[in-house]
Amino acid sequence: MSQTEKLKPAARVTGQRQDVWSIVNEAALASPIQPVVNMGQGFFGYNPPPFILDAARSALERVECNQYSPTKGRPRLKKAIADAYSPFWGRKLDPETEVTITTGANEGMLSAFMAFIEQGDEVVIFEPFFDQYISNIEMPGGKIVYVPMHPPASGATKTSSAGEWTIDFNELEKAITPRTKMMVINTPHNPVGKVYSKEELQRIGDICLKNDIIILSDEVYDRLYYVPFTRIATLSPDIENITITVGSAGKNFYATGWRVGWLMGPSHLIKYVSAAHTRICYSSVSPLQEACAIGFEQADANGFWDQAVTDMKRKMDRFNAVWPELDLPFSDPEGGYFVLVNMSKVQIPEDYNFPPHVASRPRDFKLCWFMIQEFGLAAIPPTEFYTDANAHIVEDYMRFAVCKPDDVLETAKERLRGLRKYLKE
Ligand SMILES: Cc1ncc(COP(=O)(O)O)c(C=O)c1O
Image (cartoon, rainbow, N blue to C red; front, side):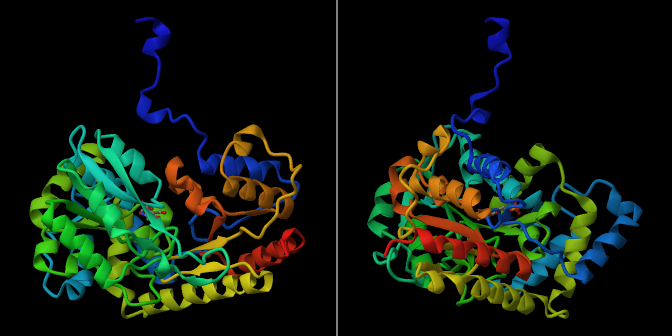
């Protein structure tokens, strides 16, 4: 082997295509309109509430909080999570065996795949997917089997509920083989904003029970729902027995940079994800776990969960008021903080100059580039969250994140009004 060959990186980190985040950043740098308003990425444009910031400050003053946390997480946080979720489960969760703390939900999911996936095992995921699932499944050698979610047939002409995006259960059954080991669901859903109904979750749960499939339920937006929200693990003891539920303090407390997440589930599953987590990063950020523990302990007394829903729904409605003005249909979210808008009526000038790596991508990438250059507004092209074969399903949509200060939402709306002159009659 030559020296240069030996220095080559592993295939798992050398994707062929430029990812969406770097294309958006490149477009933003090239835009004549500065600063670009970033409605793309799902980070908050404001701080966690004072009682949580205070908790973080005081944790930093304490000697034991600045040292290694136990690998499965600080006892106070595990207990606070078990206490906060026991009412939903209808029984007392055991903080020692049924909860484990991870470095954000993302590392929690990597730990879950590392714990259960062997080379060639199959994992079913729905499109659009959260992009990190892909590498997290592929790293331990998993094979991904994709099942698309379908937008409502009238999505290009009429605003409808995000709940109208559907799974074709025949397609789902066909995707299952004897090697299917895990299925990932995400509710409330990023980027669709769908909250899966109890009936849909029951059908998914029954399919997984029948086929001995572990359910990884990504519920990182579990405190932001605008219609009734069901947690699949709570449907029956049998379904609970095969389900790992994923949570994120970053999403719950407006602190995505803190990198605190957790997994909940039966002890016979959690013990192996804890083992994988220990091998991946040993333990997670200690003082911020303490702050999150205090966050959970005090959230109800501070009315925080209700306030979070009220505030985000108000932001959602404030921002989405611009679409009827432009006569652009959108998928009205049932949860989370993303909204998908159908932009098939937007006509990009035929001679518009795109760099080759954007020109070769689906129409939503061109819309993304065009909006950043013409209006100084960034949104995310959702075909990034589909396979090439199914990208056509969403190539007219754009994803906007509304977890931004109100003045940013208003500036974004003003910039979007510039689309008027590009709308088809
Ligand atoms: C659906 C979904 N799952 C997981 C995550 C990652 O959460 P965390 O920041 O806690 O790793 C995100 C973040 O955007 C997400 O949208």
